[in-house]
Image (cartoon, one colour):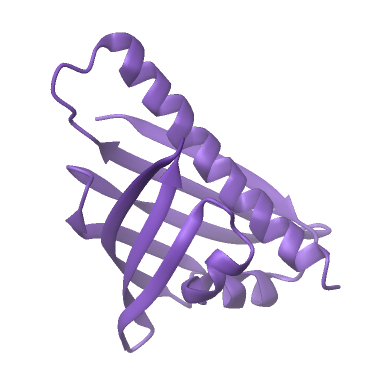
Length: 146
C-alpha cells in the first residue's frame, strides 16, 4: 500500500498547535483543498467527521475517525467510509527548539479501474503535496496569529 509522509516545524507552542489540529471543523477556513469538514460525533476527545476535499479538481469524500492521545500529542486516524479503499495514518506533534514539529503519515489505497503505473505515481505525488499543503496551511494560520 502506498504511504506518504510530511513534516514541518511550526513556530508556535505545542499546546496551541495541538489545540488547533483537534479543531478539524475549522480547517476549510484556511485550507483551500477542503470544501467542508462536519463533525458527526465528538466523545472523550475522539472525533468522527465527514470530509469533502478537492484533489486536482476532483471531489473526494470520506468519513474519518480520529483517536486523539492528549498525553502523547498524537492522533491516529482512519477512514470509516468514503472514496478511498484505505485511508489511515498518524499525526504527531513534538516540542522542538523554537516551536513544534508536526508530522503526518498517511497510508492509502485508491483503486481506479485501468489505472496504470504512471497514474499511481501521479496519485502518490498528489497525496504527498496535499499533506504538505495541509501542514503549511496550519503553519501559516498559527504563525500569522502570534
